[in-house]
Image 1: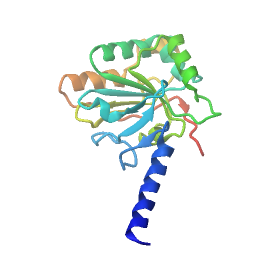
Image 2: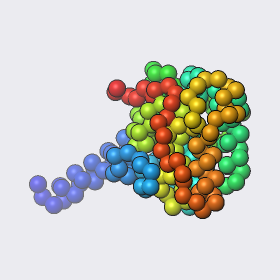
Image 3: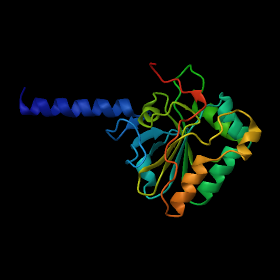
Image 4: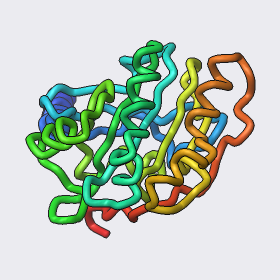
Amino acid sequence: MGKLALTIAVIGALAAGAALSIGRATAISAVAAAKPGMPAPTFSVPDIAGKTVSLANFAGKIIILEWTNDGCPFVGKHYNSGNMQALQRKYTGEGDVWLTIASSAPGEQGYVTSAEAQADLTHWHAAPTDYLLDPDGVVGRLYDARATPTMVVIDRDGRVAYIGAIDDTPSTRLADVKTAKNYVVAAVEEIAAGKPVTVAATHAYGCSIKYKGV
């Protein structure tokens, strides 16, 4: 193959790859999965308005990632009690970034269209910075999110500071929210105070995320 033909072939392949990535999540980092203390895997993913959102857009900020499933009672515990919305408002009000993510595959519990996701935000009076759609599971797999809610806190240096459960009480009882130790709150507050995060990883509890092709 001549140099000109090879160049055309490469450009064509790149263009095809770009076309396939439009409107779908794309992993930017060549990282197997997120780990505490390591750089947070970067990604580009559409939100419910169809706008592409990149993790790099929020460099220098504390970022909270929340995996959700509107049919999961463990997620419902935190929304029906008002806990999740209160945290969203608290931290976005302090200048932090909160990204809600749906990684369930089409046809599985937790999968939502843009319209359904917007309806959930309205129903729950939720207030994240944005709601990201990841039906191919690209972002979920990057962060090894296996249950909803899985929570991740990224510090201002772009490193994973916490990953795992939202709190230490794996139940669906609304009353337990008040007495549980909230790992997300602890991590964000310690980062804000310039302290190391005491608990950097736990096992997330909740409904399993049904990924595409699994």
